[in-house]
Image (cartoon, rainbow, N blue to C red):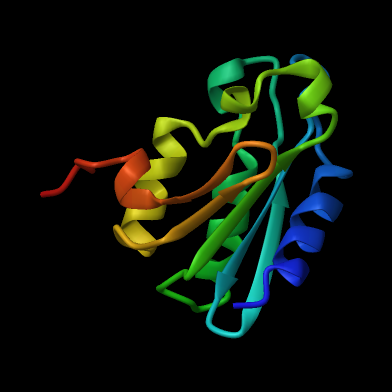
Length: 128
């Protein structure tokens, strides 16, 4: 899988982030089939209504008709300066959504933190 288009798409998405409360501008991109979908975090003053970049990108892919994703890339602008690399790791909600549409072998690339398989980040996802 060529990683560069996925990385560039996620980095570009971070530019559009709406993050007036945390100032952490996150971008994500997912590979679904042959297509790449990206998204940014969108914060809300009622913080529970905030949505992460990863879920925006995944939901764009799903709304376009995909049901399986092959890879996820996550970045945050100035993350190396503003937060530790672990501060940009996907949250539990995003990991659970990744489990729904990617499965345990899903490749998760987090800029400044490394490459992981979903099973290592969420070893026991919720299931019915």
